Length: 207
Picture 1 (cartoon, helix red, strand yellow):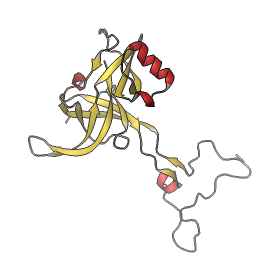
Picture 2 (cartoon, helix red, strand yellow; picture 1 turned 60 degrees about the horizontal axis):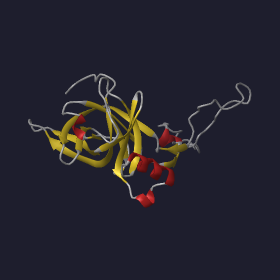
Picture 3 (tube, one colour; picture 1 turned 180 degrees about the vertical axis):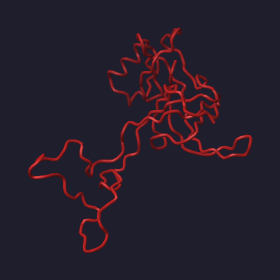
Picture 4 (cartoon, one colour; picture 1 turned 180 degrees about the horizontal axis):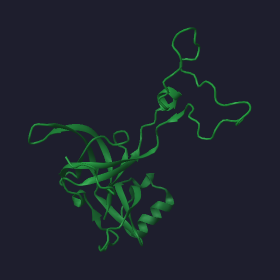
């Protein structure tokens, strides 16, 4: 298995053996149950759900598998050379201290924002009677191209995007409580759901 599902608990800090403080994100990683085995992927279910909150088609799906309903269903890639069967459990011991992981979550939504916050515009003049401090300003020309270029940076909705943070180092694992501590920040608010996978890129530096 190359990944597992989890839930962000929050951020904290730990101290290394040499006394250095490290900011970490605590994640409740698993246990997950295998729901389906496909050619290249494994379908996982995470966190038990009340039957009254499960839609009728999903309820029939879990009943057919003889597995209690799960709140989150995602797919991760198979590990080559390994066999899986429906009902197997995937736990946080999939990883070990020192591993690097890619974590995917949904970033915090920040509503509709102006260009200075969303795109880091430096803003207009602040003196000499300028009335265009934080405004959009001129967008194009009446001749060429005679329209606004597609993709032009404008005020828009900010956040609430699917975001992957790469090459986060695993610094501590608690197998009894299914807790995974990774160095650095992870996209999303507390109690949001995450997909944790083995890093696909070789980290530039191991510290």
